[in-house]
Image 1: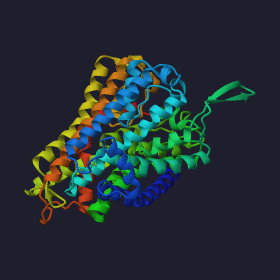
Image 2 (image 1 turned 45 degrees about the vertical axis):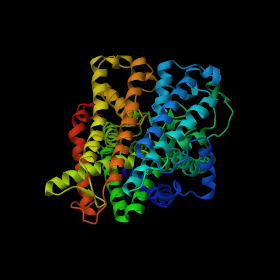
Image 3 (image 1 turned 30 degrees about the horizontal axis):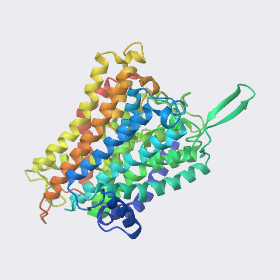
Length: 536
């Protein structure tokens, strides 16, 4: 079984590396050229933005950039909430309670896709397309756009125009790849139709109705955009979302594609050695996490893992999903052994292995700034990166980004445990229940969205509390990323050597060790009293 898992992951790694390297050519143009001097077709789109007053300038400050991003996202949360609360009016489906509608809107706009509902029961096909499908493009495009602006700051350029970046990423990156992926998935058996349902006659169980819809196109952006929210409540364990081993492999590659390509984009802009070093740090951590997942052996097939995929296929998919902060699942989390759950938590704690679309790179850079500061202190030198000084502000903001994550996980976890909110799905507290609570808030804070609770989380407490955590986990770091970018943009560029080399083997090893230490010091006790005590 271990050999099968190794082969599976080796194939995923090779495919993601090759495709990501090629895709980085396009992303480099988006960073340095297209926002300022677009090609003819893109310029026509930008002209439309100019007419409606959104794309009038390609040179905007970082504060204006994040203000535009936040305004669009907050308006989208409000619109999605209203449409879901009044689904009967807009789409002819059941109205969602205000707390579930708010949770769902915040969840999808923040690129989290935590689902306290089952899509095939709660939403019509039109609601899935208009509300959920549209948001699944805008949410990852926002994260990628912010990463483009951040890389411009490292080159001493202005942020650019958020709306131009959003359109560029959506129509020239996400949409074309999604169309190709949807066609491939449809050819492998994923339904793509606007029929609502199909009736089946079963000689043993009688007649029953199966929900249908434009599932292939939904799946493509769900995975490419590191969204993770399923058309069905069973997510990618459902045979209509992930019918066979080949679709399982392709979907795993899709989740890791853009986060990996952004690492290569960084290398194309700032030097191949730097890009390869970033790539090596992310994937060294990733393979360590995969090692944790199987450290107490791969078990026999669980009754909660899909037989058509096998435990190895389900574990490979779930691990790829958690490494990329996608949150899609190819099996119930109850089918995973405690070591696998511990590995999933570690991936969500780090958030950059390689992380979600756009923000995975940014979290890794925040770690790098902290590591450079620590390394420079060790030798008594001024911290530098790309031959520019790292100011105290950058270090402070980076530290705040790092500390926000445990705060918004552990505080609500403590509140939920103290007020016994777990009684909504369990009769008493034990390591399994504790892990479920910790996991729920970790997936919300990491904008991951996988979770044990599912529809069991559809209570006022869980809906509102996770909505707050998702909101803070998305927008506080995004704002701080661009404050860091603003400070880096103002830094003087010099030719002096870096006291701590930010490329090469020594830097890779030092960075991996420091990230492990920082994560362990912050979260290790909570893994010990959770997954490690679950047993089995």
